[in-house]
Image (tube, rainbow, N blue to C red):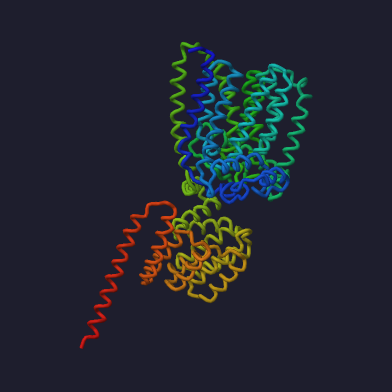
Length: 622
């Protein structure tokens, strides 16, 4: 094999291997964690238009397409996925496929960067392999909403590569390309704001340029850094984020928080056995707490190693500082996310850890080509556990149920986890489990209206409608935001469960006035009327009202069929069943099984009618 072909073959192998590793992601679902905000319920993404594109870019200080985040390129890429899918109802496959594709491209870029720095094939291949398969990467790849992370990293890695070439060739078009790529990266995800500082670190090593002499060319980059930081802060402030977690007067606690988060991130890289998008923080952040004390000791030891490494290992200094610089916005000093400790924030910083590790291998081993077998045996021994953990972690992100049950097991006291687990159980029909989880969420965070609302809905279905009314009213008093009007549907359900049909109708009239009497909401009321109140007439009424608004919703029609059957109205049930079959046939689906069932149903009705007729005739004989 010609030496010139080896890099291309290795790059192709890494690209395809990365896709194979993440094949399970392609069957993943939309998650009840931002995916609905980003795609499913996002009108601009679901209905691609130039007006939507303009809105993505124009809403800088007060983004509304995704509240608080100015990320126009990310939203544009999701819109393009919708255009590619060309489907009225979004399917998660194409969005997952794009995430996996960007991850594979990023792996190749890491390989090229490592090859530019270290030369050769072995170290670049090993480092990019670990970037590809490390379990901390799963959150960014398997979660559709993290398109911003894989997309921004693509531009960031390309910027690093062009700057490395600029440092060697001094071609100013490469410096201009670096600037443009950093701009694009920040338009995908604003947490890349500190990337210009990494360029200064690259001047130290591997470029070995005079840092002070190279500073003037960085002035446009530093101006860009200030601008992007301002945009990120203002956009986050529009939704109440972007504020310091602790005040200046709480400096010891602030240092404890940063130390704890930093050590937690290192722990996730070294021992990725307990990964979660949400993590708990020791209460009080006091130095008396053993975890905080150990974290601060670890952070001090790390800082000492970095400072002294200026003399004994510039690669370790640059890699460690690059890791901290890129990770700094996510270390918890400023609140810009529900959880400031999450695996997704390690996606790009991992490159700098691998940079230090690669330099260490190069320095210690100096292995000749004929000795590479030992290296690859060691790589396989390390890679296999990571691959197993990565595949397992993809199952966590496969659907909403797996995700929130995993988070609940990792952080049992987290209100958000218990709230979402309550929703999962409610959708599955396990209302007692939903009630218990929602009660934990209310206990931990009684000021959250959604927690009260979910508990109220679960209580309605567990035979406690009076308590349900109390919780729903509490939720409305606190304020449910965009869901405030829908609370009237929940009130109607609770009144029906109590048998107070008059007040239930009044609540539904409010819902109708407010425009929230959608077919599915009407069907909800019909479902409760049947399951809790055993009120056939009311249930049938609301199912029919739902179908009058949208006759095409098959599951509602099927529920009406079953309700009519349970309410001993077989002929009406058969008519609705035949309509159901006709609509299924219009969808070009096989209805032979349904028609056989309908025929058996007709025969049963006929037999029942014959028996009734015979009894009537016998009763009239003299």
